[in-house]
Length: 204
Image (cartoon, rainbow, N blue to C red):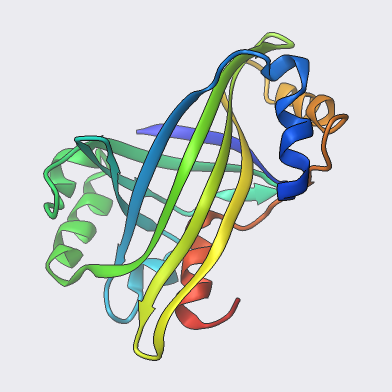
């Protein structure tokens, strides 16, 4: 299990050139296309427990991810996360999750999991050392989509994520302020999964 600590920030499309022109992001970013499918039971039991089960395709590799309910304050989120390579369509929660009760609950739900929505985007990443911290800066641009009984729905996705890989948490906020000198950045308190559920339920 890993503890994910990250700061999510909203940015307007018109501000992207200014952000990319910031000296801290002068290096050529690593760029990947991420195709993500989120699963739940038909009655959305995982959502009711504030959990997410995601299958992510990155090139030829497929990853299975489980995220639990976390704490979000001022755009900064902390949550438990498990992720490992998998075979498409297989939910091997017993091997992935090292909390026995959670693993057992997920194994019991696995036969009933169905696709609910997707988040597909291009991710550009930089790894920076800032105030004694190692931080991954990720710019995600794409869309959230869902097929519902009333028809397909989609909305654009654009956000900046600062994920703490090592070091003091305060460095995330300081880096956000530094990057915010080039572009308007606002804290985001809703996750991609929450956005997907809202789209599926017609709450956007």
